[in-house]
Image (cartoon, rainbow over the protein chains, first blue to last red):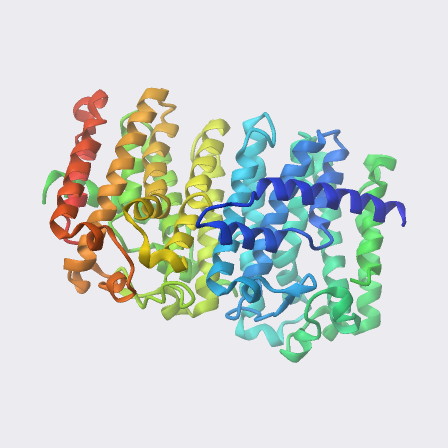
Length: 295
Length: 295
């Protein structure tokens, strides 16, 4: 296992334990809700957003317990977005993280509510003094996550993805869609580490710039995987964009140019980290990983 | 028009203007999202939750602009809950506030996203310095709203309402369902006024106790309206609980005992307001209004 793989696995273990604690099993009538919330958020994914929070926070020597809570909140919001995106009225996807989508396992009503519950609970977690002793830090985490996830961020991106004009998007429209749908949350993840560390503006801007290019590289790699990947390995339905006639980075640029572009962006992303020296090596390795990954 | 009716109408006008400003019309691809969010939250409802924020805040001389923003955030969350509750997979309701439900007007996917957008945007509004200059106040508003709306509050209440055991709930289970589904948000509304005013603990507890009994009285009156009301006047589908075989306060207690109970609770609610003197008269009048209203 590479250093990065080990570090990502350790972070994922920490996130898993934190999520399990923040989403306790309920013995009451509402047990299915908490089960569905756990089903949707535990045991899955690369935890890239959580890793960005953790590594961003580590640059400023933030206590690990604080970073884990902020990271768990962001993973809750990410999980909610997958649950709602997979609904029959949206992308109608059956498979997610290698198992049945939440609505397949718990029914549509419970999936909608589990998503709503995860989204709302994330703000409960961030607003809790256990996440940071300074209320100004906590409310800035809330503001950052809400902006990234809301109508001017992720929700807006999903609307662009479902728009009737979607099939004819050019590279500018695709880039805008990606920035909203996945980019803003990836930026918010890295920046949340800096917020927790009360980092100076320059450091925060550097992480912002890094995450912005990383997010675009990540999405291009995702489009490549959708064309070239193995569904069993990737753990979700593939080849859907093509079947739905959706323009993607790959359908517009072609496989080779898309891969070149992703690698160039990853290299540019790392250049923003110079001021952090060797401590930012895991973030540099992550940039390489996101474009070379097989799942 | 009574004093209370005038005061509620004035508050509703202020909320309407605030919501319209906080949910601007978008000229871009995401225009349908903002339209659906506006459709779901503008021009409707009694704005009782907003009125509770405003009147709670007025007891502590909070600036009206701050109270309006906090009230608008709570109304956004209330509107989102109605949009998601009305979805085909949930209550499958066609009529809301006298017009087609959001998914009837904009389709199911957009209704899910409009709900998600309203919920998330509410936290953006609360976390913004324009809502209050003190970050400790803002983050407490966030924590209060998230707890009331989340899995241990409103979302949990909706799960209890959809549970297979729902038909056989006794009065204890119905009371618990009501407290989660509508009660916690009504309490959060009144308490948010006190949070904005940095009110002493005793005052906050008094508003909490008032709102708790008010909320229960409100729900019993709602069940009475469901049996006795006129759908055109009330503005939503009625007689659904009976058709679905759902136990309610009225089906268990009967009409007369339910009405007595609602009036008793309203009177008790007002008794908690003694420490505020005449300034709390609008809240006392509201308690009478919620049990005598025809819509």
